[in-house]
Length: 472
Ligand code: AMP
Ligand code: ZN
Image (cartoon, rainbow, N blue to C red; front, side, top):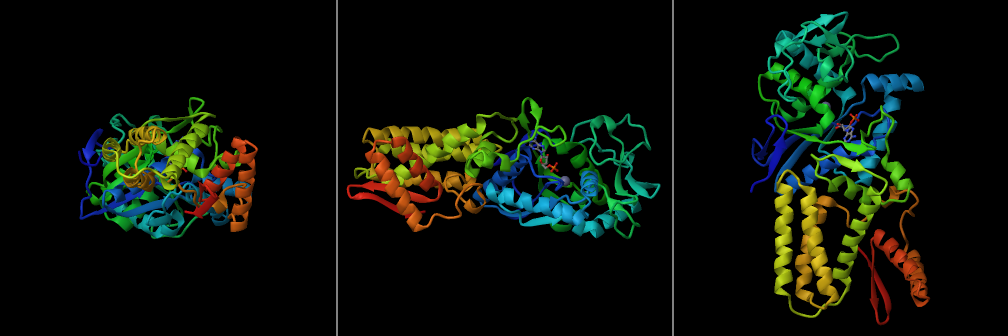
């Protein structure tokens, strides 16, 4: 079966291939930098990272643009409240977002585009829409006339036919019940930032930035547009109206939307006040890889129900995989190869790839890996695992980790409470302590040290002559 995705636009799972050559032109909505990202936001960004990695695994190249929303209603309100300029206020949260992404090993898109650096392109797009008769002005603001775009509603599969013509909405975020003509360009208000432009002074609405930046860098028709499920309406619906209203061409062929992370039966959200940040979890002592695993393990179209136990379970799963890798790399196995295990490794890889091709079914992909790990561990304990079985098992882990990215610790320098690096002397001191612990039969402490070393990329091998070690 080929690579396929669920397309919100058609409400079907469809085979995916880019329109031109082997480059996927993709736009994903980035963060609104008014505060720290919460782990719900990061769930969506982790989904985007998995999507990137899987497309590359399947041989595609990426041209991926992600915006940074650094001007909108909420940001202006917060910056005013903090007595800071828009640029100063957003710089700190942009930086925090990039750090969170690095901690979670989310690959950088080919282009990260701040909205405030593209105001000219937005004004140009609005002028184009005005020439097409899709807009009207009122008190210095410019609105999109929804009635000018009969297909309005096609992404959210909603019939807006009964809407009152001429009714307007000025806020950027609103519900379906408030569907109205929306603001493309907002008139300057006292105390608020504004820009001079070919359509007069003012500031852009939220929706126009994504249409303008997507088309500027990726052309009129994108292969994939993605974001969280709350963006389907109004944000993505409005993006379609803006882009297709101007070009008359399909704006994006595939629309992918990640379900929400839920806490206490409610969507995690800053506005509701029920949020946890990555920083909170690191402070509690969890490793970034455990959080990455947690966010990646539930398929993106299922809700991720976050509980106090979720990070613990994820940490245990990561540890299990790391222990297995360590065994493969350090234990001595008898010569030859077990046929059954050889076949099992091949089948696990096939099942892993089939699951990821199936709309990124990460739960099924993980099940394939874990079933193999269990079978191999049992064989190792029983002496049935042979030297010839090591390479296919490591290959499976390697491929798994090229997507899930949890086996090796990375970006240690930003892990709260962690030493920047362990020097060779530190490693030797820890090994000596572990040897003592083992002599004293304090296996819990010995294991803890081994894990601590593994987390820093140090592999231990116990030999007759004592422990040998090397770095990854
Ligand atoms: P924002 O910073 O509000 O623009 O949101 C950034 C991204 O996070 C968007 O793609 C949202 O759809 C997504 N998002 C917001 N809340 C959640 C949540 N609870 N779970 C998953 N994704 C979310
Ligand atoms: Zn957007």
